[in-house]
Image (cartoon, rainbow, N blue to C red; front, top):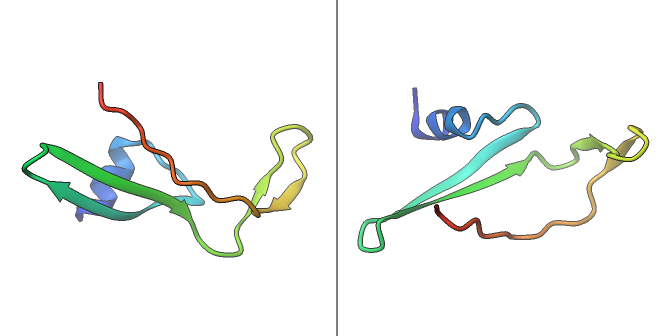
Length: 65
């Protein structure tokens, strides 16, 4: 299993979500995992379930526990 597949498994990601990149900072003792979807992917609207294109992308940092 490669690193991206391992982290996708740890994070319980399913299609269309995928691990885009990994970055290890040994000095800080942290791993940054970037998760995204393929370009032109359509997602279901959480309100009505209709298939919609993605138009808003935000970078978010999750604090470690």
